[in-house]
Amino acid sequence: MAAAKTRRQKAGLTAALLLGLISCGKTAPGSQTALYWNREERPGGAFLADGEGNEAPLKAYGRMVILSPGAVETLYLLGGEQAIAAIAASTLDPVWPPERTAALPSVGNPARPSLEAVIALEPDLVIGSVMNIALVKDLASRGIPAVVHSAESLEDIFHSTRILGILCGREGPAEALITEKREALARLTREIRNEPLGLKGAFLYSVSPVMAFTSQSLAGDILSALGVENIAANMPAAQPVLSPEYLLSQDPDFLLGAVFIPSAEDIIAANPVLLRTRAGREGNIGIIPSSLLLRPSPRIVDGLLELRAKLKTYGRRTSLQPGKNQEGAEPPAPEPPPRFAGPGSPATPNAGGVPPATPPHPRSLRSVQARLRNLTAFPLRVKEK
Image (cartoon, rainbow, N blue to C red; front, side, top):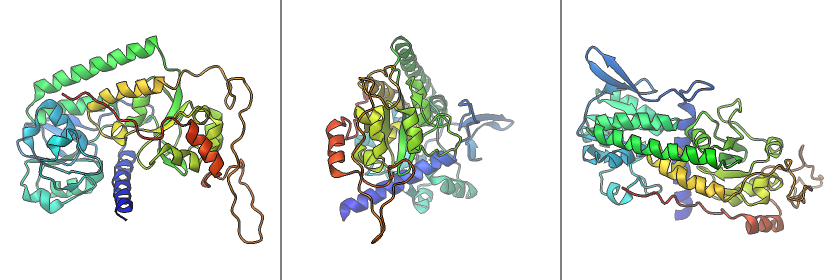
């Protein structure tokens, strides 16, 4: 019972975050240069304007309530945590550094912070997240300076880090941190140029149906930074569904799930057709921490380095045609899943012959389990400051 409740809570929290991230996109189609936070110079001084129409004077604050985990992490990286009056804490996905943020006052979890608790703290600034846009607007209507923190690209993270440095009075450390992370990305870029991965794949956030992040997202920008071809990059919808036919035609080298997806087994169980792709045949299906894709913090750069090392274990794509094995022959088709029909009526396969939401035959699933080498989330061993 307790475990089920925990799963429901985590699903609700991540659902709120994901839907917010998908719906708040401000980046123009075909471009990733738009920024979520912007500095505006006015006769009365500089102001911070967010992508939701909120604004606040751009200056140093001493009593901030921060509801965005990414902003909390950034302030700790900058040494500006003394400006934090409270955070929105979650036992399901602790905010880094957990041993220190656990001691901070909490106003609720990131998806449902308490308006009354925030007001009672008398903050001079509230930094919300895409999970609590309505609360931020409510606070602003009461005369409490409040903005929403988010990022849709790595460049956006660097930009917001610079502004967070101003807000906590740590502009110098912010510039130093940005320089450090840019240099790490430059080294990664050189490494990719000298030793390209030669892979294509996707970050998934749903398995029934299969849905993936496009290039117009932080997750998509991560794939681009890694020199990986995102098979969902140019899908027309903001929330693209990857059909079985499309997945077979693309033949991805890897598929990594996050957010709503608990395990690699769930990806295969809901989509047996994936066994006919290279990702399925070679066990290149796994789960990565959602914080790597959804938490706008400079620590993502460190996660990128480990993610590249993980992807290198998948090996480069050969010149094989989609759906072929190393010998150039068609791989054996997975055992058909059981088909269910009403009493007295014959079972009929759908177009394509693989009911996408029907679990595979137990023997087929056991064969998948034997080949998958990424059944659990791999930890990001990010070096701490």
